Length: 198
Image (cartoon, rainbow, N blue to C red; front, side):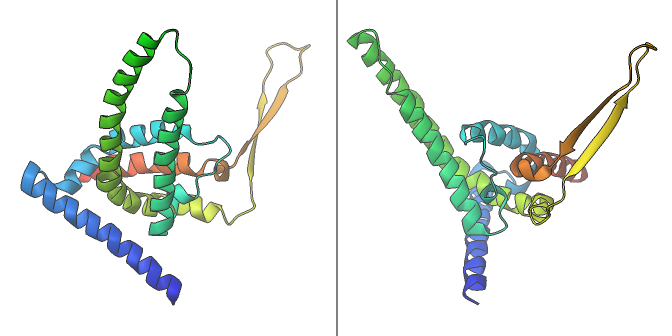
């Protein structure tokens, strides 16, 4: 019962952010928030994939496609935090002279400040609707996570030469290894189809 209540509160927060964004877009930008999100779906997915390259390669990103609102938002915040940490680590390198250090420091601050604002806006504006999309498109990946099966595809390459035998090769297709990438791909297709319908 307690878990259901927490789940409901998470959905309520997501719905509230979506409602607030709808009002702000309609009132100040004279745009339909939902149509804007669908129209920008492909661009959002590309940016999402770019931002998430900062995560560790072995990370399976289950939180990023979680159906639980708090797990999803927590994973998103973690990725954004990792991005800032990665940018901060890049500032620790040495410089040739103090002048270069001063110039680079000023330029970096001018870049990072707007970037921080953009990332905060991204979390408040994009993530709520993205949760709904990933809630739908992430269902296959979440379901595959419960399975221990791995599909192996085998093929034979025919040789043109009689003295050379045919070559056999195989590769494993395991969507569980890339749940976020698979979900993000489905999200692009989903938003594209939705955009064509609407």
